[in-house]
Image (tube, rainbow over all chains, first blue to last red; front, side, top):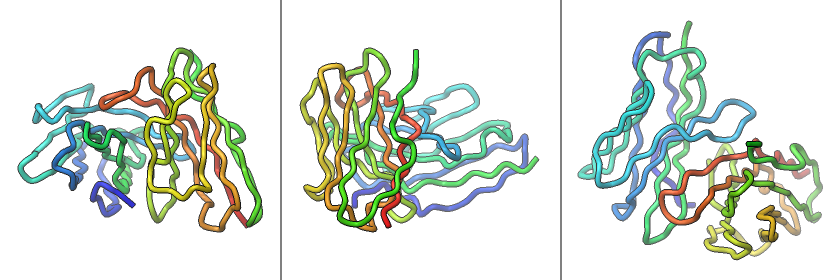
Length: 112
Length: 114
């Protein structure tokens, strides 16, 4: 099926450190990107989004960076906390196809 | 506001049966999208309904269908179940459709096909 390319890595970080989760997307026509967090037993939860006319957007403790040249998206989490442990998905959407395509996810584990 | 609710939360069926899953969106939301989540394929888009009309469809066989009612509640149906249909089915609602809509997901219905 269609997918944003992220080959399900796992990431372990110490509590208090910064986390960086990466994502490669394949469709250059995509113009909207979203990061979701999914905790065990729950549905994905919106974290932050970014339009293709931007290269950086900041939220509370999170920053999304977009590099359209190499079709790369990243999520930075500052001062990672145990509650940040979850699977993180990047997703893309474009006006030419107008449906959300999700990456396979990255499992983030925070070590207390 | 209450979040997106999905019923049932868990379901066990056998091959060949059919199943209907239900989704109640957040009050005021008119868009409902359905996704299938499996360990092997990740989250895959099934379809989106907006104001009772199917707006978009993913690459799934015709055994997967859905509908939306005038109160925005949605159902999806899977006929002639196969083992590979075992998955978590997620519903997401949004107040609008189109690119850039913010989607709110329900907890999902976990379907096991034996």
